[in-house]
Length: 289
Image 1 (cartoon, rainbow, N blue to C red):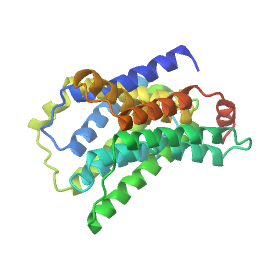
Image 2: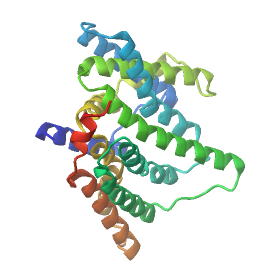
Image 3: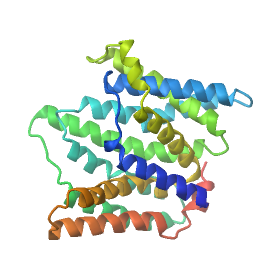
Image 4: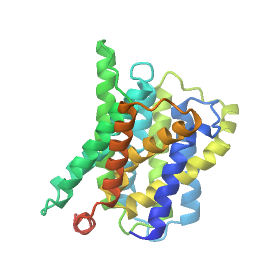
């Protein structure tokens, strides 16, 4: 991969890992706020990119596939608040690399990608050591946990599908299709959700430093989904928690235990191997239809 791809990936991971220090306006409910942001980004991308060479059928298919990667997880994470802890959700989303490796391996002939399964499981195990999951004993809690698991699988599968669909698509047109589709989905969810308010005054929260960061992240994600092989890109689900944990080491200075050290080492090793282990994945993925 080119230096620009690696640089963009590094910027994306750093922005995501440090997002907790960036102020985000919160006058609107999360689903509605994200829907409005996607709508604004999509409209601007459509105006800037124009519609030359635009395939409406291709754009619609791309938009629908992208909802599984962007919109559905946002809605499920918000709807499961109170039933599934944030720690459990973070641990579950570390399963995305495992899903991606299995999806890519199932579609190739040489089976070279299967060697990434061990690093993905090692990274997952390391994060589980650092963030032990909690299980709810209620039926509702179990159903919500299952919904988060379904979102994890959907994110992994969608990243593979989007890699294939985005090949050769103009970046601005891809951003427009992705954002407008997710805006429609999230705003529809906000209408049927109990927190839909549609306050005009709350639209000011969309214009903030956090919103600018969101714009950068969305553009980077769409571009990296097209330029970076899915298994490599899935490593962000391990690298972002790793960076956040390293930040906590610096800022909080927790007592270093055997469990903490082992978890960090496994997480770092898993993320590193997913990023740098050699395989024929790039050539294999380019040949997929």
